[in-house]
Each structure stands twice: as C-alpha cells, then as structure tokens.
Image 1 (tube, rainbow over the protein chains, first blue to last red):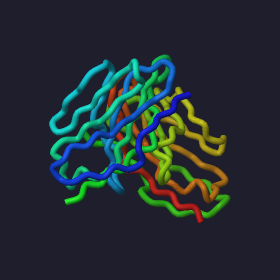
Image 2: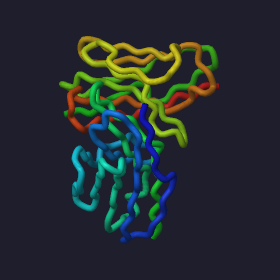
Image 3: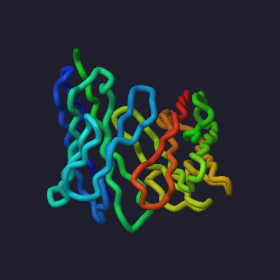
Length: 111
Length: 113
C-alpha cells in the first residue's frame, strides 16, 4: 500500500511564503500531485511532479525528490483566498494510476 | 465543457437504509472514481470504473458498490447505512490514462441519522 504524511495545519500571514511538505512511502511510485480544496468545495488540481525538480505555476511551485520520497508545495505572496486544505497525492504505476491522497494540510492565512 | 456533476447534493437517511448516488463525468472521460471524505481523514478511495468495468478498489466493506453505464455515468450504492457512513462523497473523472489530473464534482453530503 501507500502512505503519505503531511502536516495537519500551517498558519501564515498575507504576503508571506509558506511550504507544505509531503513524505510518502510507496512501491511503483509514478508521480506526486497537489490539490486544493476550499471549505465546502471540490478539490481542484494544482500541480504534478513526475520527475525530480521544481515545477512553477504562477504563485505556486511544487518540488519532488524521488530519492528522498519527499515533495513540497510552495505558495508565495500569500493571499487570504489561499486559506484552504491542500492535499498531496501519489500515483503509482502498474495499475490505473488513480492517486492516493494524504490527509491534507489546512492552511490558515492571517491578515 | 461542462464539469463533473453529482446528484443529489445533500441527502439525509437513517441507519439501515440504502442510498444511491449519481455522477456524470466530463464528456469524453471514461474513468470515474469515487472517494469518501470525512473530517481529518482526507480522501479515501472507494473504487474506480473505466469503460463499465471496475478497475480498482479501495478497502471498503461490500456494502459499498458501484457501477458505470455505457455513457460513462456512474452510480454508487451504499446498503445498510451506518452512522459512520456520514461523509462527503466525491466523484472524480479523468481520461483514464496516465494523465495527471482528476476533475472532481461538488460532492454529495450524506448524513445518516
């Protein structure tokens, strides 16, 4: 099976930078995804890392180190609207590539 | 392109009853996955259907079942409801290949009394 660990809660102030870490244990690792979910909303896809390194999409960046079984999501220039839950999810090969999600990190952005 | 739709959005049932939830994927998507979300537990994978066949299954009891129709629409059924089944049930669609992104519906909020 797979297991993922991410902090349950992170707090930061507007304009700051925050990093949400994710460590995983799995066989057949294929890639790491990140999703955002606002209260009462559906998860939405943010980014995907299949190879080591940094992927940048606007204010959000995601990093993967396959050798360390570790990744992180970096949010820059935080805004109040970034307050949400963030989930990392691993995809494994040899099956249907359906991701397994972590328990999520609640990000609280203060003014 | 219309997004993933789920019906109903809210549902209240009592213990012992059964319930059927429906999901219509994005047009052209052949894979439909179902997840159960409860506070603090993240998204727990129930099962995935692809071209009317169950392709993957999570660790849930047999009371949870599903099916997919030829138009890719999917239904999920929970029989003999228990209080612990109260949750947000999310459906996600994807192309079904090695594509990276799953598209989630708004979910069905099930409350079991």
